[in-house]
Amino acid sequence: QVRLVESGGGLVQAGGSLRLSCAASGRTFSRYAMGWFRQASGNEREFVAAISWSGGTTDYADSVKGRVTISRDNAKNTVYLQMNSLKPEDTAVYYCASTQIAYTTREEIQYRDWGQGTQVTVSS
Image 1 (cartoon, rainbow, N blue to C red):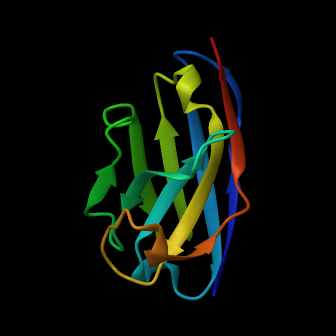
Image 2 (cartoon, rainbow, N blue to C red):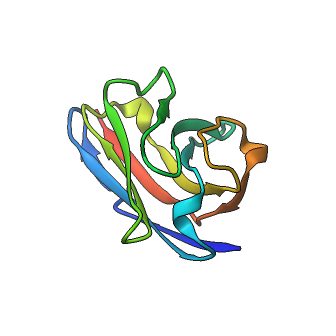
């Protein structure tokens, strides 16, 4: 099992940027793909981005493509989500999650461990 702790959320104006971090501890971080999901109030949780074990492959939801970059530093056991040109509709709790596979996936069932979430609020 891996413990995941997100940080970096906050309040930002539309058009601004935030960088979320997710620090992992526990089982070997570098072997597995990681992902970010988000859940807005009243909505179901949705996929945002994923990155393969090496960082060589990434995947993005259409709603964030071109504005968001996922990256990882396996030496620091940390995955990041750089978000630019933020919009009010990006407001949500953002969750980091860890898979037990090496390559990217959008399927929540593939993600075994989840962080507690960090709130991102984008004001108009």
